[in-house]
Image (cartoon, protein in one colour):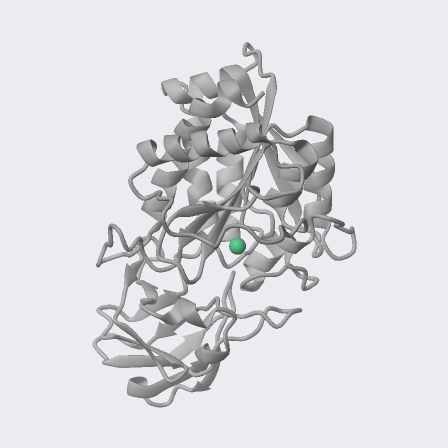
Amino acid sequence: MKISSNFDSGNIEVVDASDPADVRLRIRKDTAADFFQWFHFRASGVRGVDCRFSILNAGEASYRKGWENYRACASYDRAHWFRVPTAYEEGVLSFRLSPQHDSVYFAYFAPYSRERHRDFIARCQVAPGVALEVLGETVNGDDLDLLVISDPDGSARRACWVIGRQHPGETMAEWWMEGFVDRLLDRDDDVARAVLEGATLYVVPNMNPDGSVLGNLRTNAAGANLNREWAGPTLESSPEVYHVRRRMTETGVDFALDVHGDESLPYVFIAGGDNVPSMSDRQRQLLTAYFESLTRANPDFQTEHGYPRGGKPNLTMCANDLAENFGCLAMTLEMPFKDNANAPNDAVGWSPDRCRRLGADCLAALCDVLPILR
Ligand code: ZN
């Protein structure tokens, strides 16, 4: 058997792969920080072999509760990802498979590659009403892409921002982007037309391209956790936030949705932006209206399970910063790595298809609240 991870978003270290029934691995830390949980590797020479892979340092990972009731993702063709039997015992995560083909990929969640991102941006920019802006460079000199989507005939009084993947291991955020943007670009869709009649959409599908390619869980190439940089981003350590935040001051922000994945909770929920010092009744009403609308639009979204509310708001986080400084509806959307416990899917768990569906339905919820945004 051969284990490899020297590719886009690869992450694994081999301790001992001499016995397929007891392959011992470790996840490596983010390239410039101590976080780790994302893994992505290929095992080859495995057709018909009973394999067991054990991640020995899982118990030291950033979110240990993330391993409870978690099942690893696998794919033969890198298009369809399925779940495999997985156990977490005494700090070790183990999963088993007797592969039907010569090689198989494993990952923490269905990966979203830089090439797919480039294809997505290229496909979107040729659609009517779409402009592509490169806001600046990442730490490693990659492009930070912004899609500006508008209807030239619309009144477009409002500026709506949607960003994703500040945390690069949360690939579900970029799968979500495909659903959201593809619906927005469907000119036969009533919801899309209504949104673009009243708003210009500013979409950053991937806030952290470097961390994504590097196979990091949570940080960029300089080791910065981008969702803790919003109070004072710098060109040296967090240019990704710096450039986006600067563009936001030019456009204003009437609506902001920051898309993430949560390692531990097996639910879709919204957090953040609801407890800042300047929070107004109007913002609270908008939040309630968005929750109600998204509950109607998408069966996976719920408001019962989520992070504890109250406490001191962390103004270095995107949604809090924007709610505080723009007085707008600003939210953090969380999707599970595991599954939706209210509607589990044994074969694939929470999946790219469900991310896309949620993205499309989040546009419907935006459509509902758009007239009252300001
Ligand atoms: Zn996150």
